[in-house]
Structures are given as structure tokens and as C-alpha cells.
Length: 300
View 1 (spheres, helix red, strand yellow):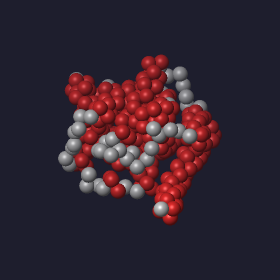
View 2 (cartoon, rainbow, N blue to C red):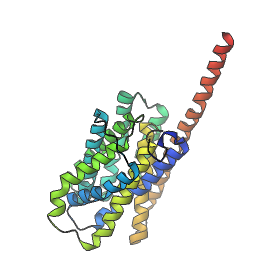
View 3 (cartoon, helix red, strand yellow):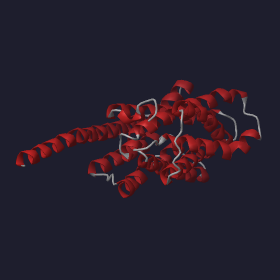
View 4 (spheres, rainbow, N blue to C red):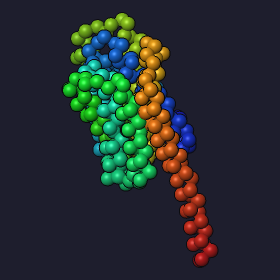
């Protein structure tokens, strides 16, 4: 167990960690676009910066080299590289929206591999969140580059595989997959990092990306995923895309359109309703179990 007490993390704290990770992830679009550097160099640099942050947190990594740990590391590497490339090759709105096809994959894979089947309420929340995101980005969606759109779709699939792999390690220590993934990413992208010097004005955004947007965000996420289902782990952070226009507004003064407000409201309602429904089920289940046990004890 890490020094943070992950094994005793309450469910409410786990949901707060998911939201915290979403806030930090939402910095990516604006910061990546602001760095005039090769996309793979950015991906490698921010992962290289994230490694010592994760090591300070983990202290003593436990590498089991299990299939779940290795798959998680590979999926993480694919996710962060594909997302940076997509951000450079298509619009930020396209990249984010297409990556958030991940809940569809998680809903299917979670039922097959984790036995965490999505009920009617989960599918309704999923439809609401994805529909809301479409309306949210409708004003800013563009054709973008076909290759960038394809990469964004691929990053959604790899993100889903990452979530499933981390959830498979709920009884172990999923943070090691994140650490391995960052090491692999930094090594794979090292040639691009050292082929040209990073722009001076890009050093501060890179530091924020590595320390907060990757390092701290995935510390929060890996702690939370031990206490929530895979579908919760991808639906609750769906508030992330809603925050991107906020940072753009604060940095550039661009005001979101009316469709953005409407879509954002639908996403927030869907995520909130789903979380409340899940919380009610989590609270009621132990009570039902206690009544069943007491009946059996009385009958004996």
C-alpha cells in the first residue's frame, strides 16, 4: 500500500479524485496548442517530467509484470502519444470529442472482461453524456485533418483499454502501469526531444503538462479507480471537455456559444444522475446483504 492510504479511500473521495483528474486533464488542449514544438517531442517531454513526480508518490514501485500491468502501460503510452498527435493534426474540439468515444468501448469491455455490466441507467447516462458533448462542440467542430481524426478515435480505444487494465489491478497497485507507460513514452519519443531544442516560451507549459496534467492527474485517477467501476471511471471525467472552453475563455477571451451551454448542461446532468444512481445502489446493497444474513441467522 502507498503512503496515501489508497486501500481505505472512501467512495466519495474516489469520485472527488476523478473530478480532480478531469480538471487537470482539461489543461491539455490549450497548453499543447501553445507549444511550438514537434508533437512527439511534447509527448516525450511531458512524460519524462511526470516520471519523477510519480516516483515521489510511489516511493517503492511494485512491478508484477502481469498481463494487466503491461497492457495498461502499453495502452497508456498509446493514449498520450495519439492524443498529442491528434491535437496537432486536427482541431482541439475534434480531438477531445473523438477521444471520448472511450465510454462506448468501456461499457462493452467492462461487461466482457470485468463482469461490470452496464444497465439501462448506465446506457442512458452514456447516451446523454455523448449527445451533450456533440452539442457542446457543435459550434467549434471542423473537418480537421483526416489523419488527426483517426488518431483521436484510436486514442479513445486505447484510453478504454487503459481503464479496463487499471480496473483489473484494483486489488493491486495500478499506478505502476502509469509509471511504466510514462517511461516507455519518454524513451520512444527521446529522438524527437533531442533533435531540436524546445522553444523557450514552451518550457513553462511543458512543466505544467508533466507535473500536473499527467503526474498529479494520474495519481488521483489511479487511486480512484480502485473504488469505482470502469464505466464510472470514464463517465465522471466526461466533465473534462466542458472545462477546455473555460481555459480558452480565461486565456483568449473566447465566449462559448449557446449550443455549448446547452450541451454542457446535458453532460453535467447525465454524469450527476449516473453518479447519484450508482451511489444509491452502493449504499443499498450492503443493507440488503445485512437483512439477508440476519434472516438466515434467525432461521437457523
